Amino acid sequence: MAPQGNYNADVAILEGCTFLDKDIDIVVIRGINLISSGKVQRLIVVLHNNVPSNRLHIRNEDYPGFVKKKMESLGLKVKDFKIIVTPTYHPATLTEAKVVLEDISKEGIKSAILLSHGFHTRRSFLVYQYVGLPFQIKIFPSACLESCEPLDGWWSQAQGRSYFVEELLKLAYYLGRGYIPLKLSY
Image (cartoon, rainbow, N blue to C red; front, side):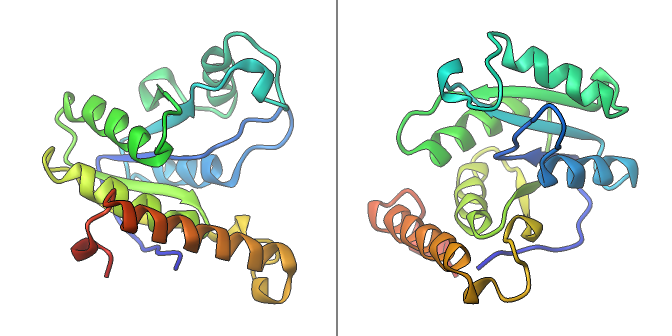
């Protein structure tokens, strides 16, 4: 349910990251490791265009500016990453993928590693893969399973089971609504 692999690509798309004052999201850490190891040339940081009151962890009018400073404080140069702010229209993951892939396709990007949290990765990968077809962008999934606490035995914890079932239902919804063609789902 949570695909991953060892890939090289033009960019890494960091989906669903959170930037807290002290703790850095595992997706960001994995992205930085990919750029440091030379597996990608640049990071694409995806932020949702939520109103500031919906950001419980920061009440900053310039959230993209805050994220830019945070990325620089982690040792990245501005050329190493790009921040893309996406609207949160329903269906959010599909809307996000359309905005992100249209934007990066203009730069000639042909491959991307999609970093996402745990079980959310399957649906995100299928959506990004489908949306990427007309842009001829190859998407490689990489689930950040560290977000499934505890990683070993997540099925024995109510929170782990709930997360799995929630993402399974969302995947079924996306398939049922036709947001992901059935032929891509296996």
